[in-house]
Amino acid sequence: MTRLACRVRWPRAFVLSLCLLAPVAARAQPAAPQKEATVQALYEQATSEMDEMRYERACRRIEEVVRLAPDALGAKLTLGACYEGWGKLASAWSQYVLVEGAATKVGDLDRQMKAAIKAAALKPKLATLTIEVPASVRSIPGLTISRDGLPVREAQWSVPLPLDVGRHEMVVSGRGYKTRTQQIEIAADGERVAVPIAPLEPLRLAAPASERPWQRPAAIAAMGLGGAGLAAGAVLGAMAIARNQESNDGHCSAQDRCDLAGLELRQQAVGLGNGSTVALVAGGLLAAGGVVLFVTAPLHVQRDERAQPSGAQWRAEIALRPGGVAVKGGW
Image (cartoon, rainbow, N blue to C red; front, side, top):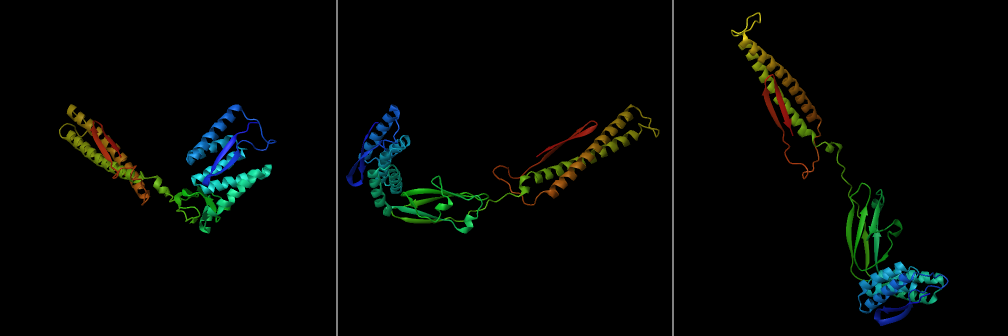
């Protein structure tokens, strides 16, 4: 089994000799040479950076060592020392407590003693955060609380939890309520911070009518088109009557015998009459439909002003054609 010499720079130049990859021999399993080489290189680089007080980079490397060698108590003890040098006392204390428990299980009394001494020394210096959740918030359905991306479950509420100095993010959410994010600042080691969770703001559910913002503009457009159709029908009807009267003025007899000019006038009168009928019927239907839409439209409709242009407009076009009328509109 490969044994790696470990060098840990403790605060105040207190140096201990640790063995990185030497858990109890009975539990050790052979590792691939490539993996051992990677772990050895990372560990040596990390301890060199710790000597240079570049703790952030060193801790990241030792975290990778621990991931690659999860049974390496020496690496975990060194990671605790790195966190301590970096100023993350809560993280360091957590590592020492973990090592103390694991070393006790495998009978490694030396590491168990070292971890216990370091954990006991750090505990009075730890900053703590207490999350208070009042009954009004506990009753929120689907309530979830997280801190720095980690869930804070009910068992952790109202308990002072060790926390590293610095800024932390808390997110509170619940079904039917707006999610709230807040920043918590731990200013110094030993600080005691209590954060009460304020009630969440309920989501404002849009009324069902808000799903039909088109109804009023459509009603106005329909009534406008209907009015235009009725007007066109009236005009065409008047023109049909005029053509018929003109045909009777010397071109057609009482027995409806007509010359060529009278016959043409009578045909024009029939076409205009048909157009008038179509326009009146279509206009009446559109006007009646517009009235129904307008009456049934909600009085208060929520609109997204960014998505809809202000002042809905409608337009209509009427074209007179031989034998009829064309009505076009849009909104």
